[in-house]
Amino acid sequence: MVAPTDPAGINKVGSPRDIDRQIDSWGYVHGRQSRTRLFIGAGVFLVGGLLIIAAFMLYRFTTDNLHAVSDDVFRSRELSAPELKRVINENGIKTVIRLVGTDDANRDSYEEEAAVISQTQASLIVAELASSRLPYRSEIQRVFEALDNSEPPILVHCKHGSDRTGLVSTIWLHDYMGKPLSEARKQLAFFPYGHVEWGEASAMGRFLDMYTAFSASNPGVSIKDWVKLHYFEEKPGREIQPWYDGVVYRPRS
Image 1 (cartoon, rainbow, N blue to C red):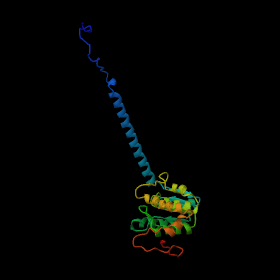
Image 2 (image 1 turned 180 degrees about the vertical axis):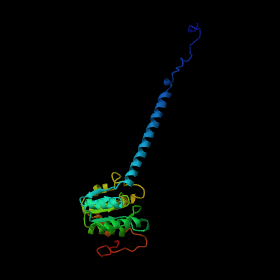
Image 3 (image 1 turned 120 degrees about the vertical axis):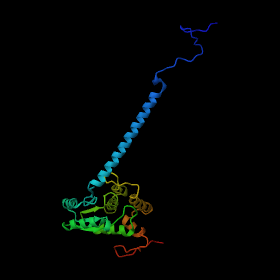
Image 4 (image 1 turned 90 degrees about the vertical axis):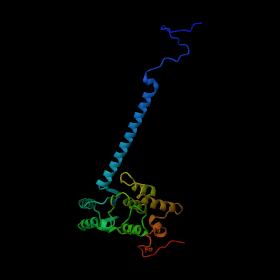
């Protein structure tokens, strides 16, 4: 039996089929297209992330971060002299609560702020807080004393108006305005205030988490009463100070 041959006389029985020399059929083009789409997507994601970070930095460091917390409480970053005077006059501010210290690093800004406020109808109260750690009992006590005794309208500010200011604004809405903590905590948000929940500034949220854990089994206790009776985080070596009602409250055994 003679094996079939092609017209050229070549025996093709058992030989592989003709090779397809079109690159598309090998799968390389589709793979290359998939990789290209992947690289483009990653690039878009990276650029988008960088734009968000840039927008955040631009907003946090170049705007006044001024917002109304309630009808008679406002929040902002540390304002320049002209900005502060404008905000006080436009909103009829009677009390400015400064959450930034008055030490050497902050002396110039404090003196400038005090000088501006002395030219207005407002008064200045310093209630220093730190955003990089849990507030000391003596510090947060000073905040409550300021909120209890300040004449409204009130302007509260820290350096950037994001972290410490967000905590005090949360306290104001929850304790003084009767808002649920879940709603009040929106004052500690990335948008529009610029608060970041991770890193050092997460201490603001941890403080509220501690209160939340306590209030779960002690409903109805305000943040102020929790601090007064149950929160004793204090600077090492510092004695427990009398509350501003004159009473020294100590941890219960």
